[in-house]
Image 1: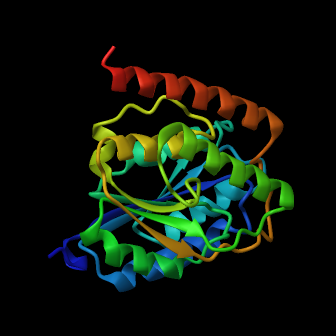
Image 2: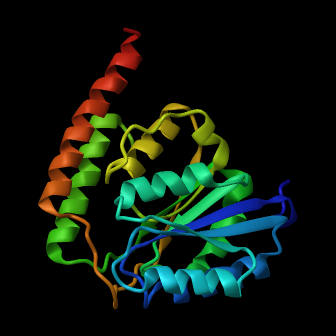
Length: 240
């Protein structure tokens, strides 16, 4: 049986417009990770060209915590590209990520680490989403579309609270660097037979910063990516 002393964990947080959030997130993550007594861990802040002081706060956190480092983007690349960099730059056996906007309780990481011996992926779902009615509606429709198109049955595929085996990213090619990336990774993992365990997590209101999700332009690009990926999956399953 795998114990905490056998686990190495890469943790990363995308951060954009999060100068008032990222410090709370990272300090709590380090507190929890230290208490778990893992074999080793690392924390990476991926600062995505924020126009506020997120970069300066991130650098101060790296100076404060020996296991924290920062990747800076000279200009904003977007959420998908930031996630991709976080997964592919991870050095350890498992990868955990959450957002840098302080909308999740990092104490819940304890439950996810406890489930690592039993599953290739531990996947969070938000028990109650603190979003506008519009965001809740688009999220609901998105999850239904993915179930119908790909035969997957996740409750909340885009929930930014997951642990994934690092070796998945040696076996797949991720095509999108946009909002569809989280779903593409989960679908490719499903097609490869990776096991998953879903667990509910608290979702907190965003108190500071700016959210860029669910813009009409992002939704349109995501619809196109779902269509193209569906064609790719059908082609691979037909053997043509």
